[in-house]
Amino acid sequence: MSAPTETTYLVWYCKRPRCGKACKIQPPGIEPECRCENPVPGLRPTRVTQMHAEKPRPLQALSDEEGRLRALARNNKRVLVTYEAQIAEAWTSTGRDGLKHVQFIVTTPDGRRHAIDPALPGLHIEAAPAATEESPR
Ligand SMILES: [Zn+2]
Image (cartoon, rainbow, N blue to C red):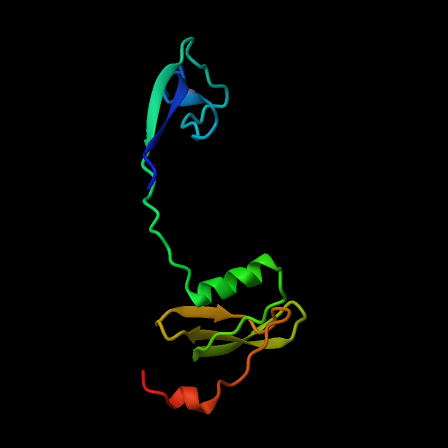
């Protein structure tokens, strides 16, 4: 686990009436709040120290599955991405080619819904093997 780090910024506040927001920040890293077209930065910057609480990173024992996936990523392998889902909704809509194409909303076993456009290049949809449909959840 790493200790929290802090960064000190120099902040110039805008002198325009009814603004007074930060308009210049050094070093870059925070978005200035001032939205004036011509900000008038004050002469002297204010020192602002920001703490960055680092998220404790849990020690991760690499599972076989995670190792396998990382090996794929390292080697830039060609991969086949598949997942099983239940078709929740289907309809047709007119595509750019002027023809009607079927669209799907599917539900994955975790209950999440995903919009699927079968016209996406390389996407292939097929019926899941019957055995998995009948398996108890
Ligand atoms: Zn301003």
